[in-house]
Length: 176
Image (cartoon, rainbow, N blue to C red):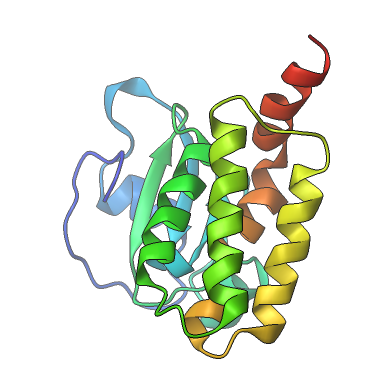
């Protein structure tokens, strides 16, 4: 799904590359736009930047890249996608999905959403990215269930590959 000519449900064997899925099977990106990334695994998944779409689909390879296959969801993102807004969307969804039982998940998601929202709205501050990374690590280690342990994975993979989009929003405020 996403910025793709032909969306739908397809089954492909392991070893198929994301490039084959995006361009050969799904017809590429509409309106002459460029591919920015492919997000795998839904709200608990991660992003694969365009530069790595020749990686074959494999549970271990995708997990090492920070983009676990999960339920097999593939979201194609074109050059116009704001990655900070994408993470904000996922964090909003996940904060509503949290049962609220454990503090690391409940408060971690709430705080990450607040920080990412501030960054998205141009109110980010120096040190926000590092704070997001710290909260992510605490959640991964201390949460009680799989949702809490993996809820920060989309943020982690996006920071790994698209950190500059977060930094631009923060640095533009510092240099004003």
